[in-house]
Amino acid sequence: MLKSLFPNVDWDIVEFVGFDMDGTLYDEFNFIIQVYRPIAKRIALSTKSTEQEIYNQLLLRWMEKGSSYNKIFDEILIRHNVVESERETTINECLRIFRKHTPMLTLSDRVSFFLNYVQNKYGLFLITDGGVQLQKAKFHSLGLSSWFEEQNVGFTGLYGSEYSKPSPLITKNIKILEEVFNPKQVVFFGDREVDKKFAEVLGFQFVQTYCLQKEG
Image (cartoon, rainbow, N blue to C red; front, top):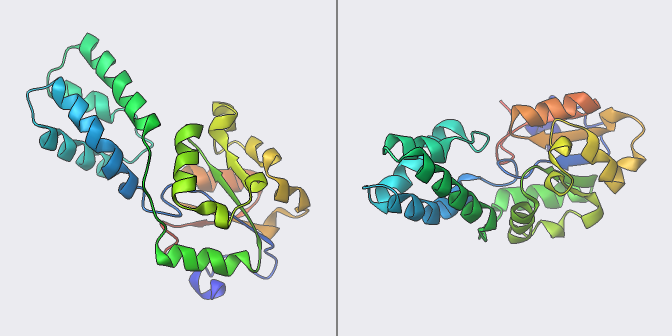
């Protein structure tokens, strides 16, 4: 199955499989539509627009730019002529709402099946960037502890920005990677260019995929 789905990987030598989380194991839009609702409500208080109008604008801009873009809230407030001092206060409150949001997420049947399959064949690990409180909440909401042992999960936000991908530093905290003697034994799945660069730095094989869709 794996050779058919991801033919660019030399599966004959693979012993360890790693994953990014957001966008790779689940559709991040499912999180965004939740967290942007209270954020839209807060931004609407600073504008003359309705909560629904702001919500739609936020979602459209996220679809255009993605989560790596950090100017979405600021752009929406500027578009609505909110003065700089109020923009700063509103953005800080929006970021607080974002970071403390309790997500309600589920894995697709496809991803659950795939993880069950590879779990029986390879050692698994996961590495995710972002604020540690929120990333841990996503991890537990998705039920990922069924496949990833705590010692093989790297929350880069726990250690500081210097540990974020593409930095290889976080791999020192992944127990299972101590067994690697050839980096080509490892394949890493991710959805972003930063995931690809991370794999390249370490010499890992790499699959760029969204929600574990087939390559090509």
